[in-house]
Every structure is written in C-alpha cells, then in structure tokens.
Image 1 (cartoon, rainbow, N blue to C red):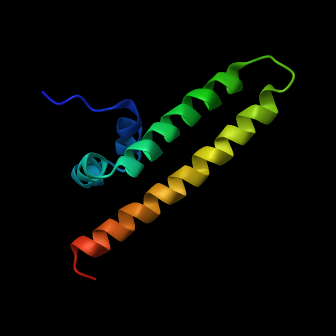
Image 2 (image 1 turned 135 degrees about the vertical axis):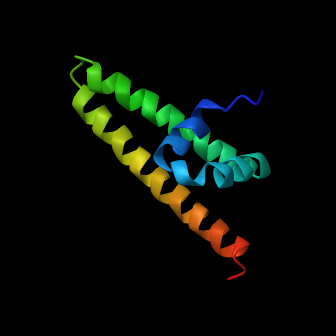
Image 3 (image 1 turned 60 degrees about the horizontal axis):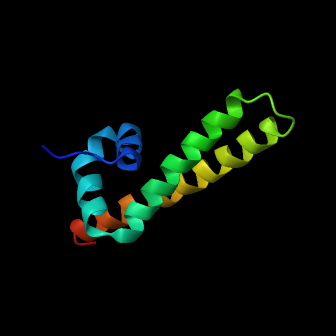
Length: 89
C-alpha cells in the first residue's frame, strides 16, 4: 500500500481528475515535492491563523492565503506544462 504524502493529498483534492499525473510528478521531481510540502505548510498555517484570536491573526491568515494562491498557480502551471510535454506539444 502506498502512503500519499499530506501535501500531495491536498493537491489531489484540488485536481482529482489528475491524480495519476500528480503522483508521477511528485515521484519524479524533488522540486514538485517541495512545492507540495510548502503548500501543506501554508494550509496548516492559514488554518491556524484563521482560528487565532491574536492581534495579528487576520493579517497572518491573509498572508498565508496569498501564499497558498501563489503556490496553487505554480502547481497548475507545472501540471499544464507536464501535460503539454506528455502530449508532445
């Protein structure tokens, strides 16, 4: 049984139709693994700050949301590039 890393799992939830491609990308690219891991850390931090009552909580939550969005864009770009390569474009 293969264990899916939490960062990869979060990305697979966002792109369920591309699970196999995401798995191949994750296994084949250390930088993609890092990107997925960074995404997981941002999700966890954003969730923490969204529930915090600290003075800076709203600002921190927004910062992590923006980082998550940036990582999501980069992941989508990599997926599209990989699909184009696989399709011979």
